[in-house]
Image (cartoon, rainbow, N blue to C red; front, top):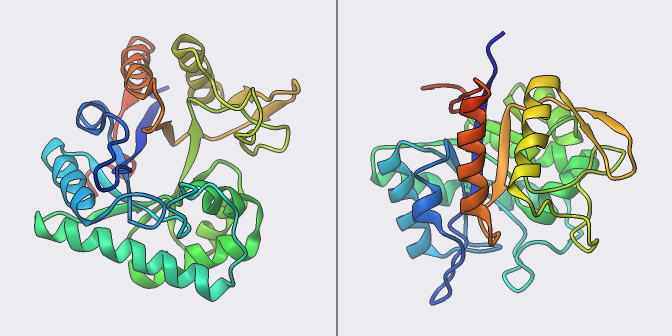
Length: 256
């Protein structure tokens, strides 16, 4: 049996004079880039440069819309209406689409960020507002969503292609959600451990939650957070390890 998986990273999260992550190096190793759209991070200059780099590396360009929360990096929950979620999603995807057009490229996928992503994973209203925004803007866009989540269901219901996402650098709760960052065990710190977990998710479709529960997960794409101190180390380890395991690394949707 041939196993294939996409590797994505959240990038373009610098702002003004403040630099975050090692985007130039990470982009050489991944297949899909989720690029911040200026709400939780990023600015027009950073968006332009990140889209340009992704295009030059042949990496799939994705919009990474989040809550309008620069101070909190989009990781604080907000209570917005379905219309507000819909509108901020359309607005941010449109921004990245504009930059992609400059280079004769296009946005291939959308992955919500931070609190918006986490809330959409369990809240049907938020999930459906995001899926509706994507479909109305471009039904050919691929939705990246937490494996087994409400966002996956909403994307399928809307008729979108959905890539179910797993995380190399995060732990999971018994219900399949990510462990809150406020907890000490939220992050996977060791790259060797991260690789073992990823191989298990890709090959077996399972993972052990923090309480010992065995989860069933579909792994179409693997995320490594670009703002992590060990992001580059993790991506290098993943690429090397997946190749050794005979797992093919490829963009979701191929050359679509």
